[in-house]
Image 1 (tube, one colour):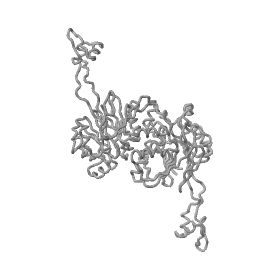
Image 2 (cartoon, rainbow over the protein chains, first blue to last red):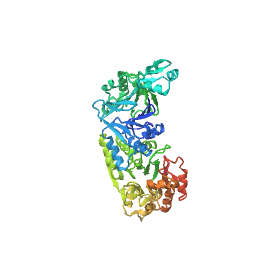
Image 3 (cartoon, rainbow over the protein chains, first blue to last red):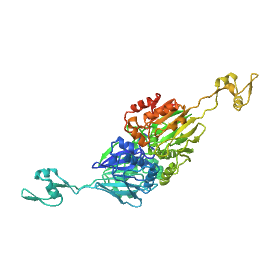
Length: 300
Length: 300
């Protein structure tokens, strides 16, 4: 898995920072997470193959997390996308999309499957052959969920060296995968003789807008990468509380409690041109922290 | 009057060109014309004082002309705008704005006055102390109007040299402006003795998406500056007709028939990286033509 940051400003874009959007790529299939205004331009700039996007996950319906969606959808359609797209979001996003299509007399060339969530409890919301996604209810001013992405791993990986060693035909490999035994040089071999067990999965969690929220912790235990919003510094604690946002310290505390491997912070307030103080504040709690700056990619 | 181009791509943004938006400034008051996605970013980049924008004119409800509006409005509100804003548009734009505000539980801090038009006939749609605006019905796939902006000029301009020559007090000037006669050195003078008549007004017309449409011509006769879309070259005539757009030649022909002083062309298709062929095609019909490139400003 590979995560690319398309935007990490909070509601007011400034200093050439743009609102929230990320691309999670799994085996060359891109998934989009949030879609603030202008995401389309950064998808183009960072060469994301937009018509390959399989699903879009919208954490909540504040504009800085979804205003770019309608432009992306209509552009996908103009560029002749026909594959079905899944959109995971709070309810009523489809009302907004449908109203705009109706008024402009636009008929999208592809079907959209809407999967809607509430924020009362965590649910498994999406699954395909690459990954499983569950919601992480957050504490914000409107219905908001983060997402946990777990890459599906096969139980084994074929060892190419063993294929060569045994000089196996395609038919023999097929039979081994189906669980049959195959005779090689007068001895029987099975799948386990040509494969390496895959023990560890990979997981990523995206925690968008939220006040400090302890109930996130069990949902992110031991994951490989955590993105957590860090809109403010502790010096703006009153404002963070009033607007239901987190500080650098909050993000670091959640990462430590979750025992995650790495933390990314973003959703930076327009009041901070220099982001290093937020990074330093998070690092007081959790040292393996990085800024989610636009254009950066992180392997998971 | 001064026109600044914020965007002039057609529906698919490419080559760092962005969708339609322009700022017309009159005596330091900005007016926004169309508002494609990301207009907010370019308003910031080009230092337009967004909370001073007095009115916004939306030509039609295809996304590349209005998707940036909701983000601009909510940002104005977050930045504590309280002055009433007028939005001129086809009907139902307010449904889109209101639905998005309702779902995100956003209450804008300022009032919006919506002035809606149909495209059956030209109407006077907006007037303030700076300008008068009338609609210019166009021939596109949905209800679409261009706009003609006429700067209001006072009937006279006070000549400061005459004030000094006659050594006039503030009271005397006030009486002259009110139409009274004033005695100076035993002779009576009137307003005409201290003022210069203002004979010429200034006018700008914005012709967004349209097929070639002869009925535009009487509406733009002799104006100072005409913006006319030129999405295609004549070599794409069939596509221009099918999509109800114009070519460089169409734009030049309208400018010639309208006897305008200067022509700007824009709304360039994504198929053209090099725009000079469109400029050259327009110039075969009307020589004083320029490309409406982002960031350029034109005095009117």
